[in-house]
Length: 365
Image 1 (cartoon, rainbow, N blue to C red):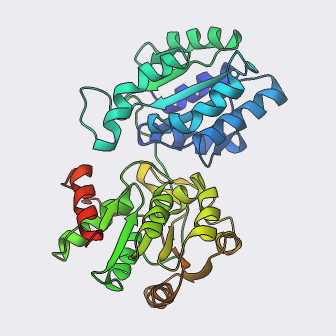
Image 2 (cartoon, one colour):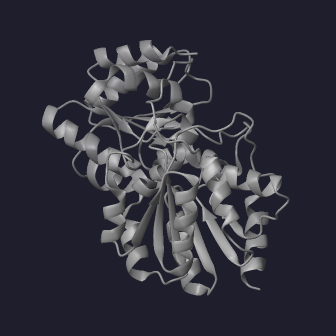
Image 3 (cartoon, rainbow, N blue to C red):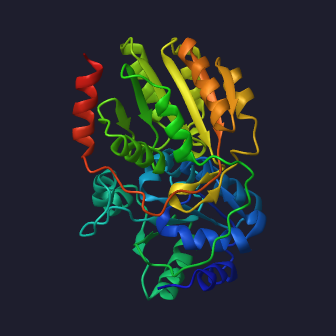
């Protein structure tokens, strides 16, 4: 394994001392190290395309390439600025990509990563991005990347599982008392069999599934958005426009920030049956707990500006009152919770396609 501190210091000595991107579980240790050591030169972006833009700005101001980190599922968000801004046929803005290889062929991973894992290397090749798999010869690989950067290229280091050794991560203290799973339990207790849920990717959908299992309920009213981070609210809007059923979107702060523009369309287009619930814990918990700006911005005013009537909750009673308000109108409910999840949290035992078919059957009746 590669020691994250040594890797960071090596990059810094090469002049690669600015880091931006979206956290990934395979880069968890490295991100924890960057959070400790890089200071203001470590920026967690809203999405991967955002990170490419930040890296471009850094290069324009300093003449030095930046490091952009992401999960391979985020390559899609980065394609536009990589090809229409940074590519050698346009502005030739070099940057080093660090890409976590979820769904690597031959490894066991979640179903939403299978396709992306298969096409990660061919996709980078199609984009004209020279890719190297990071391994024990990483110093030599970094040297090769340095030469490519000097030529104005955009090399990528593809990171396999367990590439980096551990690094201690200390989350910031939080005063909120409810956990996300406790909040989900309250939300479910306020819904009826006629209500439908679209839940965001990561532990939110896993906890929703576990709560349904524990109570002996079925899963046919829940669409688990296991991938496609940031798009749960758009799925919910499409459902609400095509159905007269109440559609509750349960989102997270990281997903909300990733494609925040969707809120404007949702607020201006959605009807009374669209209900938006944002569970804000201030971090990307599903990939390691790295901080978002969820607690630093006024999400309530943002959603109000997008056309929602907005309610807030920080405890179970406030949450129940907020759910009563959602039942009566198109509205949004912001629930602030503390980070954390139980260690024995499982994963859905059904496939995404099975989930889809049950959901479609239920919502059509």
